[in-house]
Image 1 (cartoon, rainbow, N blue to C red):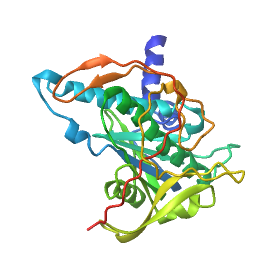
Image 2: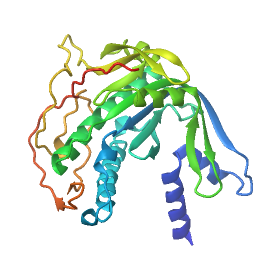
Image 3: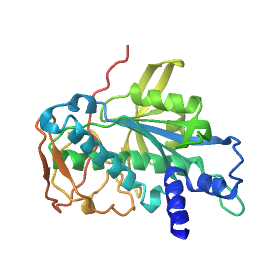
Image 4: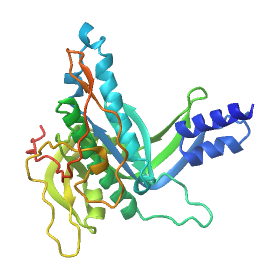
Length: 306
C-alpha cells in the first residue's frame, strides 16, 4: 500500500508543479474548489518548430508517421532534460502544443523566509534557457540529418495560474501576457528569439544584446515594437559574441555542449539519439562525438509582417 501511495505521489509531482502538488496532498480530497494563484510578473516563452509539419508524413515506410513522432518526442524530452539543470530550476514547463514548447518562470509563490527573486533574474534564466534550446536542436539535427529550426517568443507580465479538471488535471496559465508571448512566437522569424519591448527594457540592464525589429502587427494588440534577442556578452570588457555568423553543424556530444551564452550550468547527460527521415522510415542509432565547439544562433533576415 505504501508503494502505491509513493507511486501516486510521484505521478502527481510529475503532472503538477511541486507547490501545487503539495497543496492537493494537504487539502481535503472532497474539496473540489478551483485552485488558482495570481502573479504580477511572470516570464512566458513559446518555442516552436515551424517546419515540423513539413517533416511529418504518414507512410507505410515510417509506420504511418510513428517514427516522425518518435523524433519529436526525442526533441521535447531533450528540452525537458535541460530543466533538470540547477540553473533552470525556477522554470516551469507548462505544456506542449503540437511541436510548440511552452514554459514560464516566476510561478513559485514566496512563503516564509524564502527570498523573492527579481524579474530580472527570472527573465535572464528564461533567456538563457531559450538560447540553449537552439544547441539541443542543433545536436538533434546533426544526429538525425534534419534541418529543424526553432522560433521563440518571450513576454513578461501578470498571469493567473490554476489547475483545471478533476480527471487528468492540467496546470496552465492564462492572461494577456500569455497571448502576447504566443504572438511573439507566431509573428517571429525562424532561428530568432523575438521579445516584447518590456522584456528588452528589463534585460538591457544586463549584458544581453538586442536588435530592434520594428513594429509588428499583433492580433488583438495592433502594432507592437519588438526586438530580437541576439546574444549576451561575457562581461569583463570582453567583446560581445555576435550571432550574425552562419550557423554551422559540428559533431559533438551532449556532454560537451557549449551554449552561445557560455552559462555556468553543467551540460545535461548524453541520451540516445535516432535518425528518422520522413517517408523512409529509417531508424538507426547515431554515434556521439566529443569535439568541443561553440555554437551560434542562425542569422535570419527579418521578414516584414503584412
